[in-house]
Image (cartoon, rainbow, N blue to C red; front, side):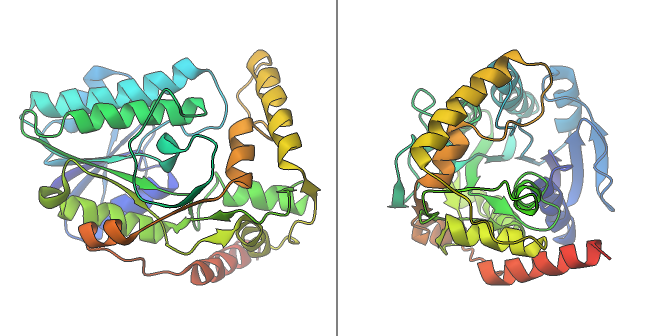
Length: 326
């Protein structure tokens, strides 16, 4: 198939583009700057420009839509333009050329409302209840994508990878590792909340599996994880050790972190620049509440299982950073 990957310059998008290329597909990458992936054609443009999106989608059999604003701060209108309207542009461009297969990449945060998630399956996105601009707009974007399923030749499924990490991760591993090296990475409470994560190649494999199985699973959404819940303390400690830092020992009550995050968010709204705040209320929630998921339906419907365990991923990550430091 001819497959367009949006957001291939990001970590997960790059892994997905390479996995599709290696599976024999003719892959193109659409983003603002060239992704520079061997064997993948670059198409540059913006999701916010309808003409750019139509040009990228033209002639494609399928689209894997990963591009999004994923920052933990910034004006909500920016999230809306990229996450909601960008998804709408993809859907409308596909419909205009007779449809196709769309694997929409969403997030479990679309159905996380601040409470613990313990062994749940995939529940419906609720933009009005989601607790951050990112989560609200990704929830709305998933609704836009899924509403198109069955219309004008469209087959749509949504995949929600949870806390993706691995070599090349600048969003999570390097931020946590960098703060740990400086002694500034706290554990909220004792870091005992159980969370699911997913190693990046497992996430990419799940997305490819969803495309392969879309005739059978269209109209459905799936949370994908490694299925190995670990404490936040273990995950943060694993990232810190991989980059050569000490495991964090600083403890902060989660109630204090949430209040501090709320105040910091307000300060970041009035200060210039778009650097990431050290804490937000949403980030504090993620670090202090359990969120792990029942993966039985996901694995059965996608006919997919993770190949790399959490501990194997930590070791791959350690070797990656060890090589980089030489």
